[in-house]
Length: 281
Ligand code: SAM
Image (spheres, rainbow, N blue to C red):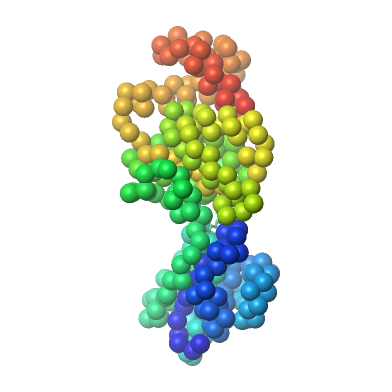
């Protein structure tokens, strides 16, 4: 295939049956496939009997590789970009390459397919008329909380990608920042054997996940219902925040009593919330 095109090709996020016939055809016919991790992608290509040469294109060499790919395209070559899973550029490398190839005057062609965020959104039951993809939150506590705080009043569905070792921390942060009552969907291992989509209030989903450690394993997309302005929405995040802070120094009973005195929220409800927060620690 010598047509000087760059194809952005989606690959499966678990179930290999999700590769499209068009993706296979393009991957077979291009001169070279730029892959985030060539060893990982070689296994995928072997599975489909594709022997197109692979070159690495990841966060650490994307700038150099963009120049060499443009050079190849100047000579009439065609290239496909793939990532380890799903759609390239969606929390994956490729932005710099696409921008550079376009600036060099070449056409970039999408070969669409799986994307974990869109798959999760489509089954979540949360509004899809408007939504915001936030990618991965910052890894460190304070920066994570700050980003979540900036999303707390976003008026449409929003969502993030999360890894298994930070999922419970995220759930606890959600209780603290947006309160226990907001609707969320936690989609886990989409298209894989242990696919699960938990839907409910933050508190309900947190309890389910705390009670079953299997629900803390795998890859996650966490979606959150948009903010709807009401008196409860204004009060609850502040109350939760106060409780989370006091729980750092006090037993649940004492922390719940103080927050109840200060806010008028029922002690029993605060105690339950305190238990949920502690379970998620
Ligand atoms: N480009 C990919 C896409 O189109 O979805 C996303 C790549 S990003 C580096 C990987 C993250 O996507 C994972 O940490 C997880 O949050 C999410 N993810 C990928 N596959 C998933 C799956 N099968 N189920 C749930 N989340 C998944």
